Amino acid sequence: MGKIIAVANQKGGVGKTTSAINLAASLAALDYRTLLVDADPQANATSGVGFDPKDIENSVYECMVDGIDPHDIILQTNILPHLDLMPSHIDLVGAEVEMINLPNREEKMKEALRPLADQYDFIIIDCSPSLGLITVNALTAAHSVIIPVQCEYFALEGLGKLLNTIKIIQSRLNTNLEIEGILLTMYDVRLRLSNQVVEEVQMHFQQLVFDTIIPRNVKLSESPSFGIPVILHDAESKGSISYLNLAREIVEKNSVEANPEEAAEDELV
Image 1 (spheres, rainbow, N blue to C red):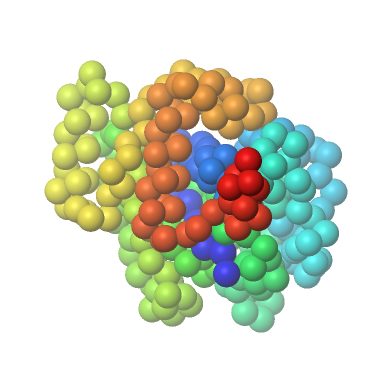
Image 2 (image 1 turned 90 degrees about the vertical axis):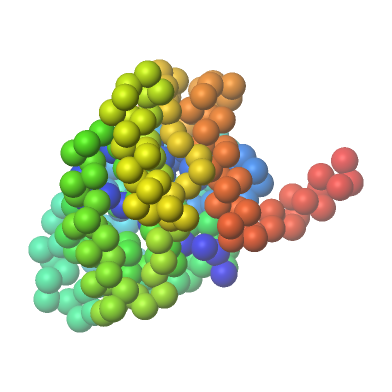
């Protein structure tokens, strides 16, 4: 069964979607079968891997609300052979209202991803910047959660609320949910504040903090405009190297072996 990891933070602008896209792409580049699930109505993860959300006919919304077979909406990206996408659409905004009266409404995403779990090594869910029903669905479906934290003061204030939400979900909806790690993003070595935030987060959360820190990087900011992850935009940039290191850190932590078919091909070569 593939590892399902939600990337979540109710605060916007912390590098959540950037992290979801580039982590998924880095895992795929390392020959792991990876599915990127766009669970954000803004559909930035969808456009970030080369698809126009306006052209999407069926999305996560139809899976969760109408019960469409998830296999029918998965798109194969033409940028990396092991990277697939479950796209989003602006219609997802209305899903929370439409699911209010549905039975087991918190488990709709879990039901949608269950048939896919054996087909992928990793499933990365990009959550919306809120603690609404869609994010609750993602956390209920996930095995673990990555929390991106921007290296600025206000980013720390919302962290407590998210951790409380995770505790509630652990106690009521998903007892197996773990914190995969806290990911420090938008780090600027020149700023004293960035260094203070890093020190404070590492001091309070210790082993929960990833060793990898994502720096501010122009190439990371540019790549979405081209509809490609940073690893394809500039493989030697600091941003690309950082997300590859993060992917390796997660693989090592979870002891996941690469796609056996791909590994066999590599040995033959």
